[in-house]
Image (cartoon, rainbow, N blue to C red; front, side):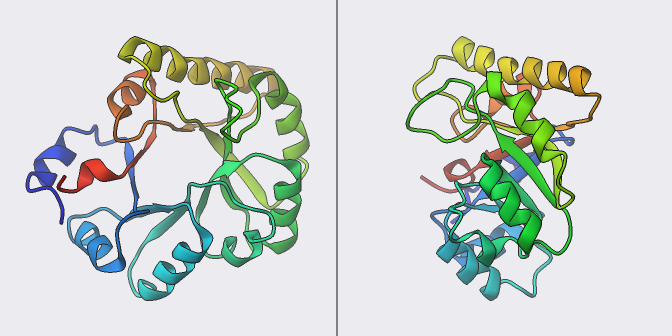
Length: 211
């Protein structure tokens, strides 16, 4: 069930921020509740679950985001059913998109800003060369970067991590003369710091629901 003050909560988020509802733990009926209050951007991170929900909700005007790590052997199943991929992290995946996708796919490159071994993503120092290669493919439309902050970070540490991605984006835009307008960063525990740093897309899950 949605939190009782959901409308008031959404009013606290600036209008220019895209709220991507991370619906990992809710079913299609609960997602319809979100549609009824005006949230149309949904983010899934498991292929099988996404395919089930996409079929159940195909009559609704949903903007689908895939926000989890997309395994290359499963990518073909989802690539023509989503509008945004938040987890582009390898040239191998780029090649699969190029082969399978009918229209250019809007992609966020996942950046491993903290170089955590347990998380996927391109390391900051490798990002510029990676982008140069990606730009050679026609079916990948780069729109920005995605990151996940370190767990249990303090507010000032979160702000520093998010601002590091903003600075990196700005530097690469200058160096490569390209536009990367979107930053997907911030989840239920750290979305406020992400917005403060310059996020355009926040991925909210449990904060939308009753505890």
